[in-house]
Length: 578
Image (tube, rainbow, N blue to C red):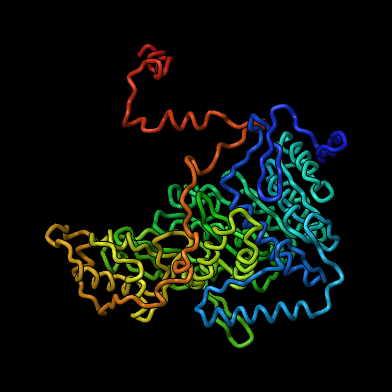
């Protein structure tokens, strides 16, 4: 169903008038009408998600449309300044190089087409927001992202679809944005033709996007962009491994690296479903923030490249005692001159028991074992956001998160946490900079992770990490007599370290994002900062969610004796006279 534009208000007023009880919510450049009864889902927590998506699509459009001879005109980019996270000398070189590029761009002949925000570009991108709710994200695309040909904002709820049409007219973007009331999967399946595919598909469901992935990888064009959000973190972080396997084809396990594991699980699922249709993915940016994960991937077609898919996935063996983990690739590929040879992988990489603590291993996966970011693309997005901070309300947080992303080790999956390593052997936690310095002194690479505040990503093997912890324990001894002979701590500390760790702080142990005090891990600004209530099938949202939370808070500790608070109906056995 395509909803026509509603009748205009009298001259001098807005194109669409407010209905009784409606309110206006402003975010970015958009002003969205909302019913007072919350009949359409809206979560203000996701402003960071929407800001980041606008920034990513802008840079994606800049790359794609440059090949079509279209230049983007983004408001506020004239005073664009590139922020380099390298050392001062390297940073100066980067800024000089950027200045040269800007001069070359200014000196070169301008393209015939200049695309501005809010204007329809015939050579631009076709965007689909499959689960649009109020249409806020689509309206922001129309008002803030240049170079768009059309935007389809779809929702299965008739009330939501009608509201999308009104919001499009209220913001004056009816020429770009079309409201649709369809089943999201069926809409994408119908657009699988090569000439009908979308350039950008955004999926932000309430919960799991698993049921939409098969249609999405077919409906996105060649080299197109998929933007996918997963909020079912309990499933992807190890609480329900069997449910995770049924949805994503991967078993999640409980571990400290669960947030990055969730990113790699959704990337594995996308690559697996795309491979069925001789397509493969190229991750541009994958972030874990707040209560969800968000991935941006490009999808290409190529039968030869799809053969590499098995060697990009890996099983993970995680020790339940000390937390050491090992990856086992699903396939193996070797280059034989001009040809690539594929064979089965050999394994497992571990024995029946952990060599460090003697405990058993849990097996999870398969998950994506290749890089989860494109550093060059992330640097472009970071430069655009930091050079134009007034464009988004969450620019500081975007700059902090992307800065950490650019500092991560690309070829090192997952991470350890310093507090968990210390907890395993019951010793004091070493300062983060000293622990990083010890690994650097030992000749290993090390970085932080945007997914966890105390994370340590390193190419050092588990044996080297435990050697560093043994050396730290000698400086901060624990009471050995209180350790059980079968505990992981006793087994680990019973061995002497094979290297002498140096905990002298190195200058390169402190990353630039930490030195500059960027907003990396934001504290929740208010209570109940998280997912909101699910929208009902009829279009409404439960209004008593906060009351329920307060009612059941501490219900086990503070048991009520007031009979009015108890159930007023008899139990099942009482009704059966038993």
